[in-house]
Length: 280
Image (cartoon, rainbow, N blue to C red; front, side, top):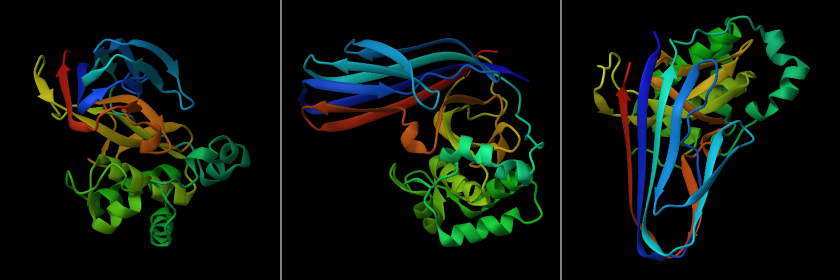
C-alpha cells in the first residue's frame, strides 16, 4: 500500500557574533523515481537567499545557497509532499557470478571500496565470509542486515557524526547511520555492490491520516543483487511506504543533509526537527 506524506525538516543555527559570509549545500529534496513520486518540494531560508539547484555525481538533488548580509541566525526549512510505494521485495535474480562479473565490478567499483566511514576490518571480513556461506547474494544481504541488527543496540548519543562502522561495532551500539555503515562493510566485504541511502522514516507503522509525528532523519542501505533494492538494518525491515528517500552515496559523507562554510562567530546552538504527516 502506498502513502502520501508531508515532511518538514527544519534546521536552525545561532552564532556568537555576526556571520558575514556563508556558503551552503542542502541535500534535503526527496528523489523522484519508480518507487517514489515527489508532488512538491522546496527549500527556504531565513534570512532569504538566492539559491540554485543541481544534481550531484550520485544523482542527489542539491540546493546551493550563499548569504553575504551579516546575520546571527540562520534557519533552513525543507518542505516536501511525497507519494511512496509499498514494501520493496529483494531482487533475487543475481548470482555470485553476476556480482563478480568484471563489467559489474567496473561499473560499481565505488560501491565496493572501503571509505573513511566503512573501512576494511579483518574481524568484520571474517564475519562477512561466515554470513555468506550457503547464501545467494540476496540472502547474504538479509543475513548481514539481521546480524547487524542483533549486534548493535540502538542508542542515540552513543556515537558521533564522525564515528565509523568499526567504532560502532566495538561499542556494540549506535544510531541508524552506524547500522547502515556496518552493514555496508559486511556487504562490500562479500563483494556485493552496496550504497548508503539517507531520508526520513515515519515513526508509526499504522500512521493515522492527518496526524503529525515527530519523525527523524534516517539511513538504510541498497544492494545490487541483479538490481538495486533497499533494506533497513536499523529496524530489520524492508524499505516501504514509511521511508522517504532523499540522497545516496558511498557513506554519510556523500549525503550530509546540510553542510557549508562561513566566516564569523562560532555557532552556539543547532536545532533540528523533522515533522512528518501522513496525508493519504
